[in-house]
Image 1 (cartoon, rainbow, N blue to C red):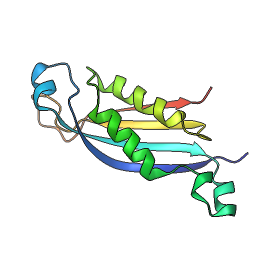
Image 2 (image 1 turned 120 degrees about the vertical axis):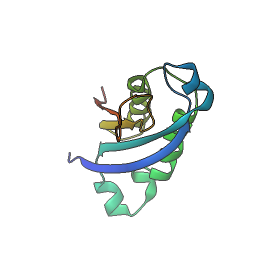
Image 3 (image 1 turned 90 degrees about the horizontal axis):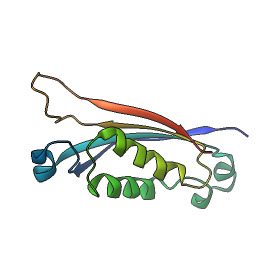
Length: 121
């Protein structure tokens, strides 16, 4: 069976993740990119949303995770997001990048991010 790619890029959500108390107190914006491997053939043939990933619902689900329970590491956050992606019907693999552009780094920088790739069992 073919696998196609559905991508959601630049989902910006305020969260309270981080090792330091001030990160948990004030929070900051996190940006999430996901790419999902799935077949879109049935959706294309039927022209019916029920045969593909509803990216609006996906965005809501991922945003709830980012805005939800704080974790220390963006690696942990990325793992939770990947798990939510893989729980969707027909998703065989997920690539998740969590950006933390306001990370507490003393040097000037543009972005810090963690990217993970996970496959369905």
